[in-house]
Amino acid sequence: MLWKFPEVSLAPEVIWNPGGIFPITNTLLCTWITILALVAFFYFGTRNASLIPSGFQNFVEWIIEFLVNLVNGVVGSRKDKAARFFPWVASFFIFILCANLMDVLPGIDTIGSLKGEEIAHVGGNCAPVLGFLPSCQPLSLGPIHFLFGNISNLIIPWFRPPTTDLNLTVAMALLSVGATQFFGFYHLGAKEHLSKYLNFRALRKGPMGLIDVVVGLLEIISEAARIISFSFRLFGNIFAGSLVLAAFAFILPFVAAIIFIPFEIFVAVMQALIFALLTLVFMEIGTTSHEAHEEHLVEEEQKVLQGEKAAA
Image (cartoon, rainbow, N blue to C red; front, top):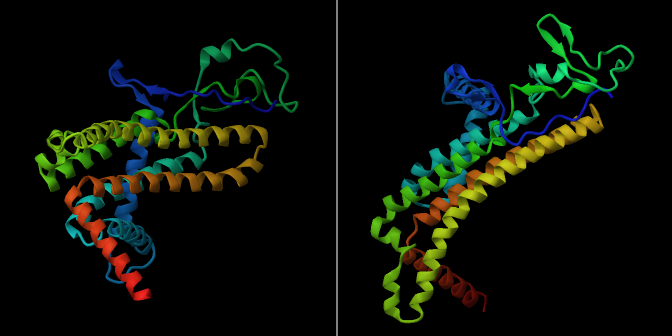
C-alpha cells in the first residue's frame, strides 16, 4: 500500500507550546497566515490606486462592488444602515472565503512533524512499497522526510483550514449575533429592542397577548439556536470537505483532485456567502421595528391592490 488513510482528528493539533502556557494549533497558525495573506492582498491591490482601475486593483474593486451591491440590495434606501453593516458583512465573507480555500492548497494536512514514538513501534508487514520505498521508516533527504506505507499517516499536520476548528466558527457566530444585538439597541433603543423578547405589556390585550409573550420567548431561543447553526454549518461543511478530499485522494490518487477540488472551491464560496448573507439579513431584521414592518406590509398590500385594479 502506497499510503494509509490519514488519521482524523476533530480537535486541532498542537504544533508548538512556547512556555507551556500558549499552545499554538495548526488551525491557529493557518488563521494567522490567512490574516497576513489578506493584508498583503489589499495592500498590493490598493497601493497604486487610480481613478481608472486596471489589473489587480480592478479585481479588488470588483469584489468590493459585489459586496456593496449585496448590502444595498438587502438594506434598501437606508444608507446609514448599509454603511454600518458593510464592514461586518465584507469582513466575514472575505475572511471565511480565504480560510475555506486553504483546504485545496498543496501541503494542507500533509506537511508536519513526525510522530516519532509511534513510528518507532510500527509493526506488521514492512516490505518496501513498490519494491523500493521504505514502508516502516521515513525516506530522508536531509531535513525533509517522506512517509510511505505503514507510517504514511503518522504526522502532526502543521497546516489545517481554520474553519475546520469549531472554536473559530463559534467565535465568529458569537460576533455575528453580538453585532446584530448591538445594532438592534443602537437603531431601535433599549426599550423597543428588548420588547421583541420580553413583551409582557402584550398581556394587557388579554389571552391573545399571551401569544406575543410566547413569541418573544421563542425569539430568545432562536438567538441561541442561531449561534449553533452558524458555527456548525460552516464547521461541518468544511470539515466534511476535507475528509472527502482525503478519502478520494486515498481511493483515486491524482484523479480525485480533478473532480473534487472544483467542487470544494464551490462549497468554500457558498459557505462564505451564506454566513455573510445571513448575518446581513439578521442585522436588517434586528434593526427593523414592528411598526415599520407592519407599515411595509401595508405598502406592499396596497401595491398589490393597485396592480390588480390596473389589470382589471
